[in-house]
Length: 95
Image (cartoon, rainbow, N blue to C red; front, side):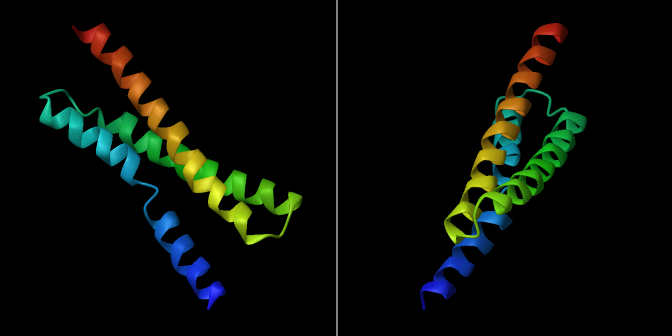
């Protein structure tokens, strides 16, 4: 039963990694700011790449399932920061 819970939690966590950039994009649209789709898709590509790199890197450290929870969380934070900071710079440049 414990393995099933881990599989379901990991499935949800890895399936929801795109929520951070899409959430920032929705907030920007609500505030009537441009979305910058190129930056959005770049953030998604960076996020997916970071998940893969972190997952492979952590698999060399340990085979414990607990290490599988780190990559999507860390990648979502970094991709969200990238998207947020880059759009702030673009907003400042265009205003």
